[in-house]
Length: 539
Image (cartoon, rainbow, N blue to C red; front, side, top):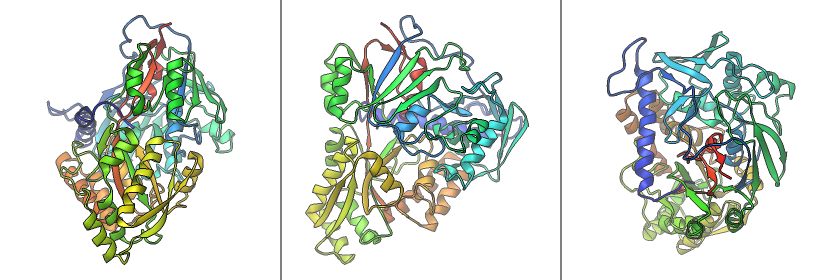
């Protein structure tokens, strides 16, 4: 889920994430009132009062942006949904305390300023005059309610573990929020900037019985207007958005177009103005069209083959290791993305990302794979079921490629091809033996490592458990020295690779294609579409 050349991806992503983490760690380590060292950013940050510099030309308000999406949204509760298709809509409806810039540096969103009072205490000053779309003024009580709702085990948010380090949320006045942790928590700012940490209207949620099935009341640049399943989702301009001059568009209409060729055709013929997941196979065709603009950068995502570690034969780590040795990641990337991405030979992070392992761990070795299968009691291989989805071609095609490769060591994966909503239900419900899936959007290594692999986490769909791994992840979050933190996470990754609850396949490049009259769009390294608030139509 990313874009541009493989060589550009690792360098630019590393720089961006390094800056983000440097800000987090420097601020966490700063004592009260202490001046930051010259080489590090200050602990207090102030949100921009004005919108970013306009795109070339003269931006003009008005118009409707028609967006061809890969999938219809699945769930509208920002604290509960796991679907990227939902978040790319909801991130334009809601705001967070903090937000990411395109390169994943952190800045204020609802927080006008923020500072570390001490290594375990943060103060956030809210913007004044911010209103929910319903007209209710935003106060610190809404921030406290939102974060505590995510933490609440009764709500069952898949993000609850990300806020587990928070021991208290205080609101000394309507525009001040104090967040306390028991120990230093290095990822805190990156966690709070994530689009999953949306600030919601307490009164609105309670009035709707705690459910946000197809309603929303945020403070973002666009208001939720309607959802017609499998047809369209419509957002309309929020005239009271707290950033002056934004948004410029009157409406954004999301139209699901799951088929890659149909999505490319839609933007080429003008049926839509913009498409996400511009298919790599069509890039040459799209670039040859003078009416189309392609954008994109490397995106921080992980595509993998995951195993249910509670069912045979995937309860045996040697079986899982055998598959890790049998997979040809280059060939999988070619089948899934026409080669547009980076194979993952050593864990869930690129080697250029600061906590990533620098040397390959798994390369294709069929003899080693056969030896491990024999040691596991499967010298002739076995048959198992692989749940796969063609809805996202980069997942569906990867599954087919893996299926063919594993036949060479006697493993027969019978593919059950499912529409995305059905696939997602089975995946989240742990109703599978093996699946091809992925995750993305992280700016710090802690959220993916903690949410996906720590024992008992809601997003640990593999039911994986290793107490040593859990302890390292917890220790890494408390370490404020970047080099030491990297060493801790690298040790954790080595354990993860030894246990192999999933086989890491590749990090994909991601592209967007749009009509040349679409101006002001910026590609985000986490796959976000929040730059729609800057978009205008030059026609």
